[in-house]
Length: 247
Image 1 (cartoon, helix red, strand yellow):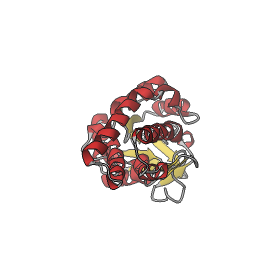
Image 2 (cartoon, rainbow, N blue to C red; image 1 turned 60 degrees about the vertical axis):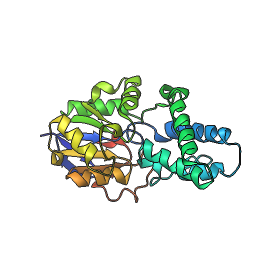
Image 3 (spheres, one colour; image 1 turned 90 degrees about the vertical axis):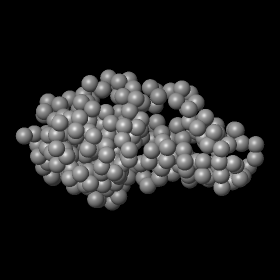
Image 4 (spheres, rainbow, N blue to C red; image 1 turned 180 degrees about the vertical axis):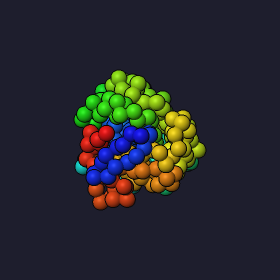
C-alpha cells in the first residue's frame, strides 16, 4: 500500500483528494482579480451611492487594497451561488428590488466568464507538476475536489497541461452540497473506486478538513492558500504546500 508522509505523520492511503484554489493554484491572483472585476462592474451599473465598494468587498469576504481573503468568507469556501446570494442581499439591503439585484449580479457574473483572462490568471503553486508526477509514481489515485465549477476547473488544469495527472475532477456543480459537507469526497472516492477511509484530503481551509473528517478520510492542511497554521490546526497534519508531501 502507498504511504504518504506529511508533517511527521504517515498516511496509509490509496487516494489523495486535492482542493484546487490555494492548494494547486494561486488563489489570490485568480479570485481577487475576479472579485475586482465583479465589484467594478456592479459599481458602474449603479446609479446611486447607497452601496460602497467596501460593503461589496465585505459581502464577498475580500480586502482588495490589502490583497486579503477572509478564510471564512463566501469567496474562500463557498459556492458561486452563495457568493451571488451574498451580493444580492447587500443590494437588497440598500434598497434595490430583489429582481433587479439578482438580475444585475447574475449578468455581471455571466460576463465575467468571458471577460476574465483565466489562462493568464491560472498559476500553479511552486513545484506542482513535479509533485504530481511524484505522487503518480507512488501509485496514488488523484482527484480534484473544488468549490469552483467542474468545467472551469478542468480548463484551468488543462491550460497548465496538468489535467492528465488526475483521475477525477469534482466541482460544486456535481454535488448537492459543497464543502464541508461530505458530498464531494464521497463522489470522488466513488469515481476513484476507493473507500473514504483509504483517502486523504489536502486543502487550504478548515472546510476541506471538516469534509475529510465527515467521511473518515485523513486530512492535510496547506499554508499556500488563505489560512494560517492556527486556523488549520484541526487537520491531521499541516505543511507549507503540496511540494512538502513525501511518498
